[in-house]
Length: 97
Image (cartoon, rainbow, N blue to C red; front, top):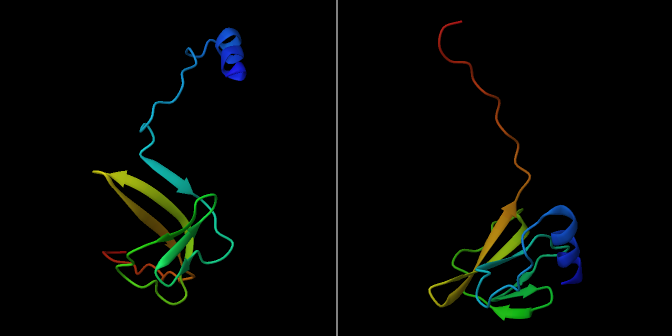
């Protein structure tokens, strides 16, 4: 709060306010050193192990890069971002040359 007040005085930012309950609709966990999914559970930093309903298995060779925990309509869900090493095909020329 002290830093927020100093920024307000010096740089002209808006008046510092406390965040309201329920203001954040999602939380992002940007990096994982190991695969956070084991069976029907996901391990999130500072939260712990949470049971999940994994609709589709993670394909072979894909790595979980980040997880976003969302709150929609009184329900929590997790959106996973995956990465794989896939070679891109060369673009084929089309039309007249």
